[in-house]
Length: 601
Image 1 (tube, one colour):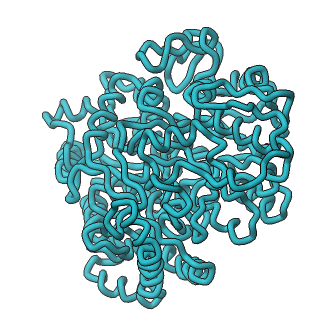
Image 2 (cartoon, one colour; image 1 turned 180 degrees about the vertical axis):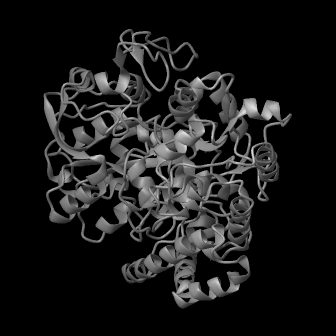
């Protein structure tokens, strides 16, 4: 999960879906689950490693080990070296950290400076694809796909949950991926819209099921309360516009495009089997027109795209608005807490309304931020042990439960898999046990976004109330959209694409804001598209499609050998049932925009 706390830095987006690379040639017969370290001599790199480490086995090093690691200090629970998390982890695994502690606001910049300067720690978590791409050419980070055969839990979840195609989307031109992502059992959404249900009851309205219903609901609220904006939103990343806006993310999938936190310039059109430029799509225009209508009819507060979060929450809490973006935890910690002083006020998070694209969810949500590893780590004598440790803490069932909830009998009781899990009454988290004397994050160090993300449906459900489980069930019934196929760029292509993307992304963001605020009429759309062409839109999207086509030509013989149609994903398996994410008080802001990347820490 992702936490939108304070002012967060932004970064330029790189190519959509990253440079996804050569798949099955590296992966073997079924893709993604095997590495290549067996071809390398690691006999001198096994200090402290377990000889027969396997799925479900507790990792414990043969002697005390210390790994250098970059650790983000979240302002919601600032780093504390004395957290029981570290003490318990050392007792269980014989591993401790030499931490490089960095505040949230400086994390992305500090990471870049250290990696480029050659003095980064060995373990570099909280890396959002495609952030890692900038470090590949210089050889500063490890091609981790070469070493996943040292990680049985990682391999097991990839195979069991059918995540090979998702991992393909991370591959670079050399066919390798350089980040170990968080793994989710199936697509899932956390972000949606919160609605004051007592107002709906007063107006004899049902919960909106479609975006047309949503529009009609706001109109009814406006008619009953003409002096206010019924919808005043948060998470605009302090005024940087629609490109860093949560509502645009929430609405875009239903309109058949991407926007806001998940905006990427290249969008995979599965019907045409090619990439198209997102900001020029008819579907993007339709989305912009819809939001522009909400603003123009004074149903949506125009300050939604510029105001600080606290201002939006205050309007909702004081009864000056009735609708706001939310996720599972902020529904409880911000919104219900905020309206507690309004007699009879109630609020719920509704399933994301369905748009013209039908009942769909994004397939990419099955991967989360992940870990990059300093390339120098492979030269250390304890390299194998480090990979086993990472595999246990971040990818084993036991490690995931520990990182999230702590120690059974101390911070929680019951079991994850049989539904008996319960947070201990003397521990609070995310609105649970609000009057408990201890907090799971600030006092214990568990449920820290550096260590806790990914997991099974059962683990996900431990953090949710019955109403949130119902929300997840409704969303999980929707059809996952195809994951964009690999389209690895050459170094020269990537350099040019990055230059084009800067101007294109800025222009889309700026002009989208002008359209939705009514400062530029929708009749100017064709002129806007011509402006994109003037900023090399066609050259950019041609480059992306050329990379995709080159990949298909190069590997069509492999596809045929494996019994797949040429042009299909390098691996295709069932979708599983439903995933999980870490930090609760956070925005599940997606991977590619800098606003998201920083906010999710």
